[in-house]
Length: 473
Image (cartoon, rainbow, N blue to C red; front, top):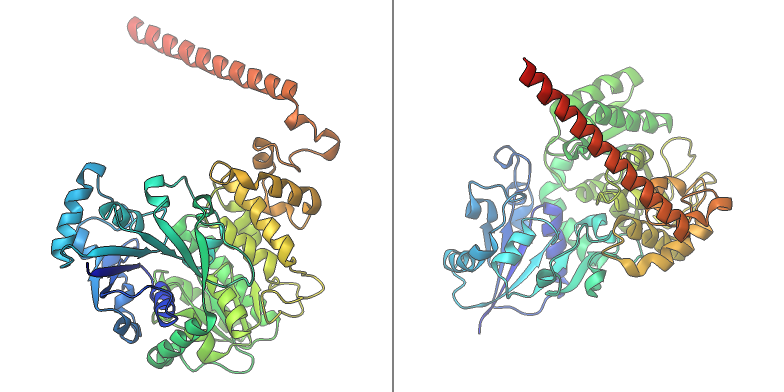
C-alpha cells in the first residue's frame, strides 16, 4: 500500500524545522510527502502565510506538493474549526478525494497537537499514526489540557530542537511519547539556505556594536495591553543604549501595528541611537546569522535560545518579571517559555555582561541553574500547571520546592496555586503542616460550603424582593 506523509505547518520556523528533520533522515521513507500549510493569524487575509514569505521556495523542494488548510476549510478559521465526531469519516473521504490520496496509508506530522488545526486534522484521519514536532520552547511545558486518548495514544514521538541542552520536554510524557532531537547542524544548514533568499531582507545594519531587539506582539495574546507592549519595546531600546549600543535593529512581529515602530524611531532619535526596522517577514535566526549582532534582546522569544545555543551570540531578556505576574490562568502555556528564559538568560538591566550560551556561567547578578536543578524547576512548574495530566511529578515538585524555593524562584509559583495543591511554600514553614492536616482541610471544606449556602440565600432574598416590588408596582 502506498504511504503518504502529510506535514502540517503554520509558521516558516515550523517549515524550517521540518526541512531540517527531513534532511537528517528523521522520518521513515514514503511514496509522497505533502506539506499542508495553515495560516493561523487572527486575520489570515491580511497576513502572509508561511508559503508566502521570502525563502519558502528554498524549502518546498523537500515536499512533493503544497496544500492549503485555509482553502480546504474556508470560510472557517483554522484555529477555531474542527469536524464534529459524527462528520469525521465524511471529512476523511472528502480530503482523500480533494488531495488525491486514494487508499494510501496516511501518516501525520503536526505541531501543537492539543489545539486546532493539528487536532482537527488528527480527527479527520482517525486511524493515521501521529508524530509531533516542537514549536519552540512551548514543547518543554506540559500538554496544556487533557488530550483525548484516541489522539494521544497515536503519537509515536516528539521531534524537537535542543534549545536548552540536556533538558527533557514534558509535552506528551503522560502518553510515554519518546522525545527525539533534530540535529542542530541540520537546522543551521536550513537557516543558511534561507539566508540566501532572506539575507537582503535582513538588512545590512550590522556593526560590531549593533543590538537586535525581538518583538512578539504579546497584546494579541491578551497578555499585555498595546500600550504596555510599546513600553516594553522602549525598555529594550533604553537597555541596549545603556549598554553602549549606538546601532539597534528592531524585528517586529509580522502582525504588529506599524505605530510601534514609529514610537521606537522617535525614542531612538531622542537617545541618539541609529534604529533600523525590519519590516519584511524574515526568520529571526536568519537575522542572527546575517548580522551577527553584539547583543540579542527579547522577552521570551524562542529566537533568544536559538541565538544563544546555536550561534553563540550574547543574549539578554527583559519583561519576564511582568509576564510571570500577568500570565493567567496559572496553566497558561506560555508560562514554561517565560520561566525558562527568566531562569537561563541574564537580565538586560543591571547586568554587566551577557553569556554566550544559555548554559553559561553568567554574571555575578545572574547564575543560571544547573542541569539537574533546571529539570527540577521544569517538573515543579509543570506539575503546578497540570497536576491532573502529570500526577507522577508531585514527588519531584515537592523535592524541588523544599530545596530551592527562595526569593529568586518564588516568582515562578503563585502562593494560591501552591496552597490549592498542598505543595511546599504555600504557607510559612512553621505552619507547613496545615495544608496536609485532614482536620484543617475538613474545616476549610465546611467553611466554603457555608459560604456558598449564604450566597445562595442572599441571591434568593434579592430575587424575592425584586419580584415583590414588581408586583406592587
